[in-house]
Image 1 (spheres, rainbow, N blue to C red):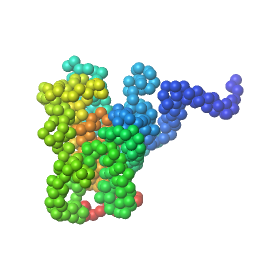
Image 2 (cartoon, rainbow, N blue to C red; image 1 turned 90 degrees about the horizontal axis):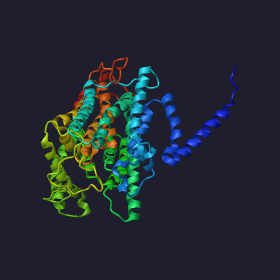
Image 3 (cartoon, rainbow, N blue to C red; image 1 turned 120 degrees about the vertical axis):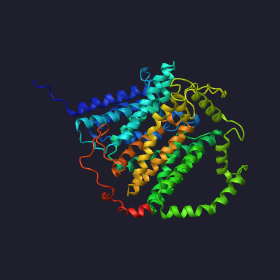
Image 4 (cartoon, rainbow, N blue to C red; image 1 turned 30 degrees about the horizontal axis):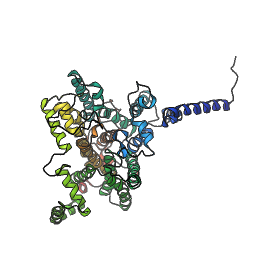
Length: 528
């Protein structure tokens, strides 16, 4: 006996009614939750049809572009139109859904969900996603070691009586790094996907720059207040990334198109970075350019700059000397340099960061090899101003997360957590000198800059507990693996830990050809 046939419009009407009711119900919880039913249908479509690369691109933009609520964006004075999305992405789901068990943010669900989807497709032999280049085994080991070291520091800290509730948020973002690396690994076929992700980060930077500019020029002006920053501390890393793309693409392949695009990016991103007023952004950008200069071969441009530099040194010295005690805006760069040397406390005085650093070193001195473990506050042999009324957990989260790693993990923990950064720089510099493709060489230099910028953010602005910083360093690690294998900087591994090797071997660098790219440069020319 056959069931009666139901007209298709009845099914669509029922589905529409369900979506309307679910949207109204979701709106009672949170404005963004109202979108959940439609987003749910979108998720089903992604699972069944869409290559994982595209949702990963969307998640990357969301993480970097929406208001990063953990850092009180816009100094807590003004929520941008992207604030509801930022709250949905980064606030604990228990706060949004009122379900106490969901004590984690949506971004974690997206990371693990996309990684799991990609792994499931690989196991099932799905053809939706192309086969990615594998990762070098030493890089895999270093990334896995970071997670193992973090978990060991957690176990040691709790065994010593640490506070498990606070310990989980000391390492949460850093522990997600290996999973984000895996997500990017599966999302990218190889270096050919780098431009897509680079453009995504630039678009996020432009978004944050627009928010920064509007807030500084309109909102702050109307409120009549002074603010320390206009978006968030971690946005410095996004701004620096965009500036590096603008500069280094031209360095590796000088042409008019790169000049025009580069100047546009510098102008639009630069104004937002200036309003955000983070000294680390300028220090990081200068350090990135210096690193690129040292890594770059002896091209005619490099030789010209080296020969020209001695003539400018006397003028630079005079400019710094004249502006050291001046308050004129003409000498603003000099004042930034002086503030980095003297600190905010002024010459001869200790500011908050100086005292905190000394306290972290004293904490590390207790257990120099193993550290205190997570879940413990750092010591205060030199008392700090009490900021518990703003940040009750401030002694669990030092501004200088680098010294925090030494204090909580000792030499062993610090080495285990950060070994992957050394391996990343080693492999990507090898890849740089073995590539004849300007886009790939520029990517390698940008990755070195990202590592330097990440270290600066960890050193000065709690970068280790920032998703913005963690996503970008994870992308750098994943792309390093692709570049290293693609260029022959590291042999094609046999490991299937994060992906099988391609069916055909990668040809030697001299034999690689790329559509719409320049012909490989002669080896002698690359050596200068």
